[in-house]
Amino acid sequence: MEKIVIEGGHRLEGTVAVSGAKNAALPILISTLLTEGLNTVDNVPDLRDVRTIKSLLSDLGAKVETSGSVVKIDAGGLNSYEAPYDLVRTMRASVLVLGPLLARLGRARVSLPGGCAIGARPINLHLKGFEELGAMISLEHGYIEAKARSLKGAEVYFDVVTVTGTENLMMAAVLAEGITTLRNAAREPEVVALAEALNCMGGKIAGAGTPVITIEGVEALKPTSYTIIPDRIETGTFMIAAGVTCGNIKIVGSEPNHLRAVIHKLQQTGITVEEEVDGLRIIGTEAISSVDVKTLPYPGFPTDMQAQFMVLMCLAKGLSVISETIFENRFIHVSELQRMGADITVSGNAAVVMGDGRLTGAPVMATDLRASASLILAGLAASGTTEVSRVYHIDRGYECIEKKLAQLGGQLRRVPA
Image (cartoon, rainbow, N blue to C red):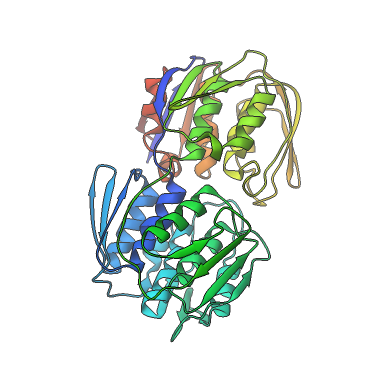
């Protein structure tokens, strides 16, 4: 076990490079199961979740080689249709192997997934969609059993917008016979990236990035090379790091078009956001304005930025209301921020933050991935020393975050707990 110790009160300045997007890398790595031959995926971040997916691919019979940020995968020797509990229990994205295994092998046995404790995220929408494509689904002994002699195109309507559901059905439908239409589909940049990767493999997918995605099934896909898009949540986290420390940071390799809702809200607080040729420059302000935020599916304000933005509002002057509409249990970090002096009241899916411009260092405990990031941000802004324990959560989604913040002038280090 490790913890991150932070000496707060230091202004962040300089340039930082954003890594590849975890939430794009995971489904694209998994999509290589649909092909025979060598796929090359570049700009893959070195994260705990990525390492788990690579282990899962190897367990299924794929050959996986990693050199820096380049991962090469050959799934020609795919010889298993089972994703076991020991590999799946730590992360929900593992359920994405269902679609490719079902499409390629006609069968999949996948343990019910685990992941962060941020509320129920049922996969019934995935399973309903697979049934509409012709699969038979059963749940036995904690495993999802899926079988299909052949998948047939169909019209699938998602009752609720689901990113992993959209991705799973897209990967299954790409090899199904006929045309599949996904309605109320997720519009996230990571969904668009997966569609682009599948099209590079020979898929015929149209409408990604809109609520209606059409997939014309093909007989087979071919291996390809693809570069992962920049991580918009890591970018947003560094943007807020500049804001909470009244800093001046240039974030290179970022994609502003993926962050319009976050940029708009930061500008409302008085933070300067300038788009430059190779990234974004963020300049903080000593007079942070309070603004309200409501999380929504993309292109709305991302739920994965809610905890980080709450830290910024703790440092603002005045009252703000943060409404969480995606996950019902995503205010677990509030009690830890309260230990640092934050004045936050939670009522249902809303948190009322009374900012007073200051936080104080304290020992705190991370409960999930984005909560970890919020506590590190709070430690950077706080007076005194903050110790964040259970930082294994942060390693699931941020590549060397303490080193990147240290190169900007942050005083933090990772030590044994």
